Image (tube, rainbow, N blue to C red; front, side):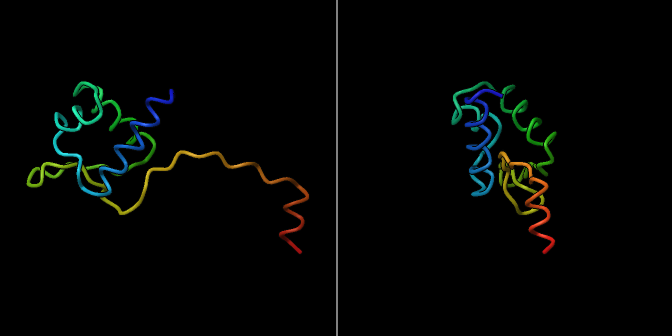
Length: 87
C-alpha cells in the first residue's frame, strides 16, 4: 500500500466515524479521487474486515459495528517475554 492509499483509508475511517462521508461522489471530491477509487478503497477496507454499509436516507457510509479501522505494526513477543508473562 502506498502512503496516499493509507492516508485516504484513514480519512475515510474518520469521515465514517463522524457520519460525514456523503455519497460516493461527494466522498470522491473530498478525497480528490474518482468515484471508482472510492469504491475500491471501501472494498479494500471491507476486505480487511471493516463492516461498512451505506445509509440511503442519510447518504453516508457507516460502520455496522462501532469501531475504528487500524493499520499498525505489532512486534512479535520473544520467548523471554513469554516466560516473564507466565511468572
